[in-house]
Amino acid sequence: MKKRLIFALAALVFPALGELDSLPRNMEQLNQQGLQIDLDKIKERGFIRVLTRNNPACYFMHRGQLMGFEYELVQRFAKKHGLEVIVIVPDHWNEMGKWLKEGRADLIAATVTMTPKRFNNQHDLEFCHRYGQHHEEIVSRAKDNSIQNLEDLNGRTIYVRESSSYYEALQNLRKKKKLRFKIGLVPESEETFEILNKVATGEYDLTCADQTILSQSLRMKESLKPVITLPLIRSYGWVARSNQPDLRDAVNAFFSKELGGTTFNTIYNRYFHQAHNTSLNTKFKPTGKNQISPYDDLVKKHAATYEFPWTMICSLMFQESSFKPDAVSWCGAQGLMQLMPATAEEVGVKKPFDPDDNIRGGTYYLKKQYQRVPDEVDVLNTTCFALASYNGGYGHLIDARKLAEQQGKDPNVWTDNVDQAYALLSEDYYAKRAKYGYCRSEEIIGYVRKIMSRYVAYDTAMGQTSGK
Picture 1 (cartoon, rainbow, N blue to C red):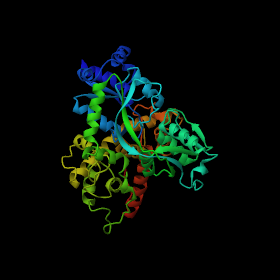
Picture 2 (cartoon, one colour; picture 1 turned 90 degrees about the vertical axis):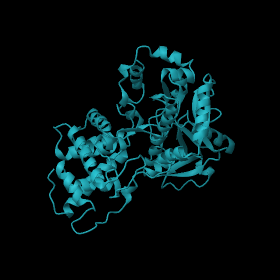
Picture 3 (tube, rainbow, N blue to C red; picture 1 turned 135 degrees about the horizontal axis):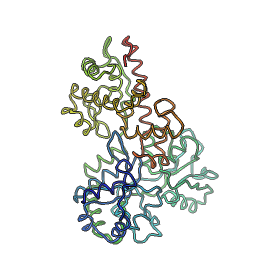
Picture 4 (tube, one colour; picture 1 turned 60 degrees about the vertical axis):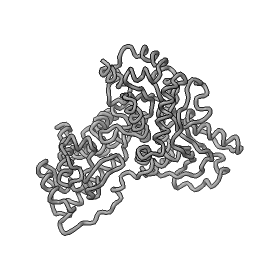
C-alpha cells in the first residue's frame, strides 16, 4: 500500500513520473497531516516531499537520468534515513514558502539564498544549515563595456524576480549608494538561467545572479560577463517548518558531516565547476590514411551488425569522447560512447572502458533509439531523432515532437521544426507543461548538428556513400 501511494504521489513531482489526474483523492488530508509531522512520522510514512525547481542547478532529466545538485543531495540525505524522495515543483518561485507552510511538502531544497527577509511573512519557516558560499554579480552582455563602476548603473534596468534574494540586494544597494537604476520585475516562473539568457540576447538590459549559477551559464556559452560584484557573501540553505525540530536537526547534522567532504565536493563540482562537453572543443587529427580513429575495425564490425554507416558511429564517438576510451563525463557517462551506468547495464556492457564492449553497447543503444521513432519518419530525420534521444533521453524527444506539432511545425522533421521545439523546452513556460520537464536544449541541438556535419565530412573523406 505504501509503495502504491508513493507512485501516486510521484505525479506531483516531475511530470515524467506520473500524470496529474492520478493523484489520490485525499491529497488535502495528506497536506493537513503534513503540517503536524516531524522526522519520526516522515520515516513511518516512508517518503519525504521536497520542493525544488526544474532547472540546471536543482533538478532535471539528462540522458534518461534524473539529475541536479539539489536532487543528488536530497537523495543522499533521504537514503541515510531510509526514505524515498517525492519531488514537487511549483509553477512559481514565490509559491515555495507558501506550499511548505500549507503542509504540501516537508522541505525546500532549491539553492535558496539565506537572507534575513526571505520569509518575512512566513515566520513559521526556518533555514537549516548553510552551504555553498558565493557572491552575487550584476551581469551584462559580454560586449557591453559601458559599466566600469557603480555610478554607471544609473539609468539602467536590472531584471530580477521580486521573491529572489537579488531583489533584496538591489534595493539595499540602491538605497545605500543612492543610485538611480531601475529594478525590472520578471515573472515568478522565470528561472535565473532564463533571465541570464534574455540578457545575453538583449531582451533584458542587466540582471543579478549567484556566481555559481552564472558560471553554469558561462560554460553553456552564454554571451555574458559579471560587471559588479556585490560585497556580501551569501549561502544557500534548505528550509523546513519551525514545528519540525527533528527534521531540521537531521538536515543540520547531514550538512555538518557532508560539507568539505569528498562526496559533497564531487557533487558540487559536477554541476558548478566542471566544464561540460569539453570534447566538443578538441580538434580532430586523423591517425593515418583512410583511418578515422584507432578503433575503426571495431566500429565497422558493430556498425554493420546494427545497420549504421560506420562513419556516422565514428562521428558520434568523437563527439562523445574524442576517441578517449577512459573518458568519464561530468554526469558519470563512461568510455568511448559515454554510456551512463544504467544504460550500460541495459545494453549488457560489463566493461565500460573496454573499447569493444563499449562501442557495441553504444551502437546497440543508438539502434534502440532509432527503432523507437515512428515508421513514417524518413531515414535522415530518424537518425537526427535517434541522436537527440541518445544525448538527452527519449522522453525529451517525445515532448519536442508534441510541442512542434502544437506550434504548427512538422513533428517528423528535425531541422527548423523539432529542433526549434527542443529550444523551447529550456524555457520554464514550456518545460513545466512538458511531460519530461526541463531540457538541456542547446546541448542537444548542437550535439545533433555537429555529429551530422562531421559524419558528412568523414564519409566524404573516406570516399563512401552512406547507405542509411
